[in-house]
Image: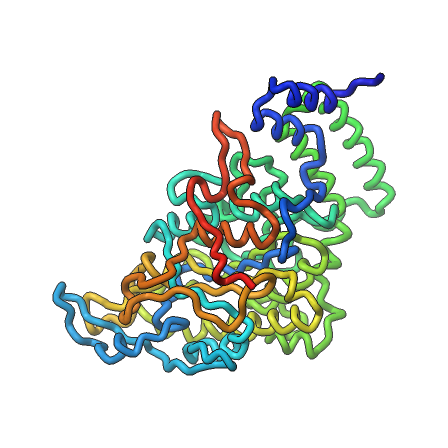
Length: 451
């Protein structure tokens, strides 16, 4: 009987000589790290589109209507601060009657399909800590991003595209750590897409013909495999080799995914996108739909960078929200409508998130901005397995403190993993002598919002 390395590993595991963490790492080294993996239980979602509004959107100006706060506008608080009411009117939308400000009329029109989360809470009030807390579950230490965890847990449905892709024109707060894989094999790191003529660097072959490239890469593959012999337990080496193989497939698959020439004028209008234009959130949303159709598991869209004039960070002036909201409002609503008409809404989870909200008060009545506010803010979620037309969680009458059904970042992460078929407590990776998971020792699935 022929004995191979995998049989030996499984025999040792059966006899109890290998710890679970050792077993997972050894078997991972013996297989394709991006091959499709089975769901841990039936999944409602096949993919996630995660939209991150960088800078911290003011909840009391957008999705959390506070009439009492508005009535107290510019009135002094005991601690020498002044209440600051919303700068825009709110109105009810849909049969559900969920109230949304005039900043987001198009998103408002989709409220019957959206679950509003007005009791969100983060673990840090600094941009860097809050951003990585939302994405990685830790606000202080490097950890893998949620997209990397999903890539590690489920692999990819399309061998020519990564499982985790991030469309980010600029760098958000915390930079590439937002999509980093940290101690997970590097093949699970998010692939950054930058809108423009070449969304992914080196996407086009340098040699004049495909046959010449195949010959060159065939030789490279031979040397890579020879180098791997005797080093099969080196997961980082195997992942690096696999990343080159994926890159080869992407030279065909990625240009086609980013080619919008055959999308109709009506589709371009749905996303508020001019034909041939790659700027704006409309391009990001339309490409996200195309990546979703092509088997990418986790697609993140990032709006804004670290420049205060181009992100949602508003210490000084709230008026820039007029332009910022116009950039994302119609494209996001268009994405939801497009997913619905193509039959993708029911198995796509859409998340609209930000790192925290903004204060319902200011130190001076003449200040037109707002400060950081992480103890309660708003996000929303829609699509696969989510009850539409409801509001879950709330802040107090001033939008200052949490009132009921608070959802922490670990709860949101646990719920996302649950909907895509992963038990957040069971998805672990052995590193530095202990098992790590996205939600660490926290997190509860928010069953009340599930359909």
